[in-house]
Image (cartoon, rainbow, N blue to C red; front, side, top):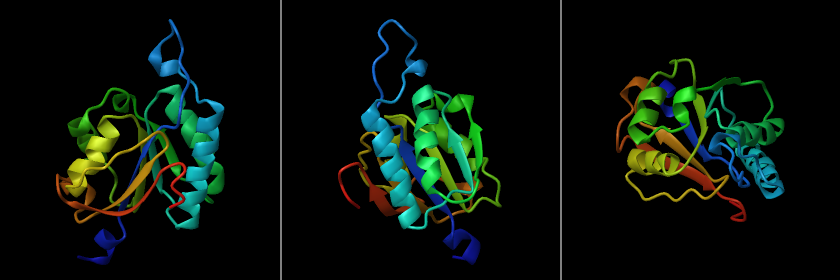
Length: 166
């Protein structure tokens, strides 16, 4: 494995706890106070472990964008942030296709999205059952360049969920 591949990281994050919006569109559900706190804690955990994204790809849903707004302050730097329309109702295969388009210059990619696709992506990449509660994170080290990302080509190097402390 060369140095470029050795430093690649994919951070898979499920959005934080959101409230209901009876009669409203699912995409407009906002974070609850707990979700705001959990997102900030997730940002602190990422920063404390040195996981700083170069690029953040985020579902257009309000709750995912708000999750990033609460994660970002803990991370120094100003990663490129992009809302990808295709991430909102994406399945695992769709996520893989989008991630394969990541520029080679990106060492660490943060994806903020939804279950079941987020947990399935982490599980498929690592070959291990991964559960992602709201605001949970799986940090995966791919053994390939982004365009070659495939099932079983990643190793889970760290994980965090609210209340876990690690």
